[in-house]
Amino acid sequence: MAASFFSDFGLMWYLEELKKEEFRKFKEHLKQMTLQLELKQIPWTEVKKASREELANLLIKHYEEQQAWNITLRIFQKMDRKDLCMKVMRERTGYTKTYQAHAKQKFSRLWSSKSVTEIHLYFEEEVKQEECDHLDRLFAPKEAGKQPRTVIIQG
Image (cartoon, rainbow, N blue to C red; front, side, top):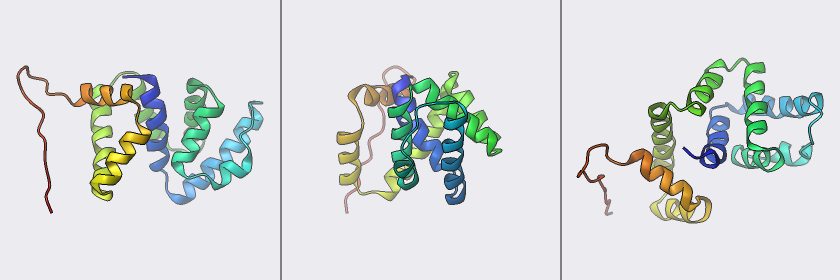
C-alpha cells in the first residue's frame, strides 16, 4: 500500500470517525500539542474553519507524513479513542484485509451518498493515478481468470 494513498485518505477517514464535538476537541488538542512539541503552527483560523477533509490536507501539507500521523495518534490517545489508535496501527503495519474492509466501507458510503457524476468527478479531480492503481490491486479478484463484477444502474 502506498504511503501517500494511506496518508491522503487515511487521515480524512479517521477524522470522519469523530463526532462533531470530538472533532472540535481534536482541533483544540492539535493547537496545544503543536505548541508543546514546538512544531510549525498551522494558522488557527484555517484549523478552526476546516472540515475533516481540509484538516487532513492541512496536516499533510504542514508536516511530513509520519509526523502528521504521530500527532494524530497522540491526540487520539489524549481523547481516549484507543479504538482509532488500534485501527491506525493495524492498518499502517500491513493488515491488508482490515484496510480493505475499511476502504470498502468508506467508499460504499461515498457511493451511497453521491451521484455517479459526483463520484466520477471526485476520482478525476482528487485521486492520483497511482492511488487508483493501488485500489485496483486491493480489490482485484484473488483467483486467476476471474473478472471483477461491474454493476450498471439505470434509472
